[in-house]
Amino acid sequence: GRVAQVLADVQKAGISRLSVITESP
Image 1 (tube, rainbow, N blue to C red):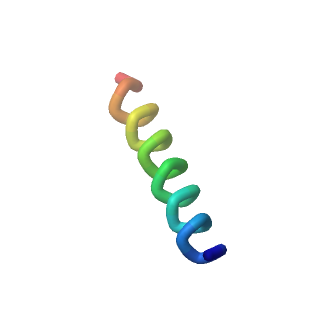
Image 2: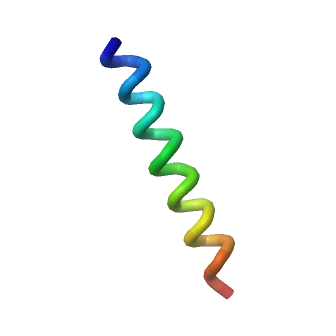
């Protein structure tokens, strides 16, 4: 469903942001 897709996108975006923040000094 759309909800699952949105949640997946949000998780991916969140993980991407966290990884970027973690990589940043």
